[in-house]
Length: 138
Image (cartoon, rainbow, N blue to C red; front, side, top):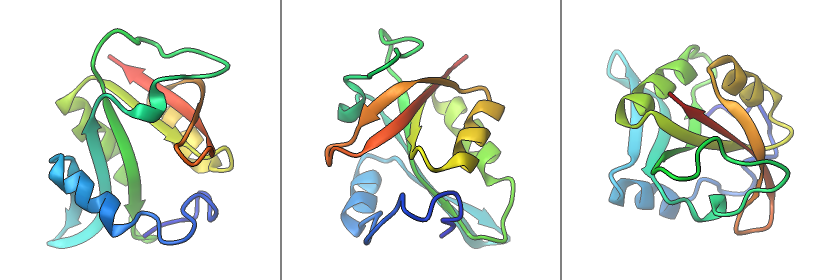
């Protein structure tokens, strides 16, 4: 999987098999194929996302309606344009989308802003790690 946005964001064995199995159980696990070859993976999961319950130094664009969360986007290094396809797919499921990324992942931050997401603030994972939070609401 592609990790050139931030090599430190997915440390250890993340995403774990348990995380992917949980995505599958929630019917939120998806792959992107090109000519029958899996070139990317992502999760698009319904709310609520526990780590999004509290946001710091900002606010969600809309905190009153259900939303979907995009997690664990990874692709083969030679594949391009995957992010836009993933966003389009997720927006068809729910126009209210949230996502977070590591502060060092400048590529993802650029892609989020370029694809209509607004920076909303900071959230903290269960581990205590900080993430920058974004939301796109049509």
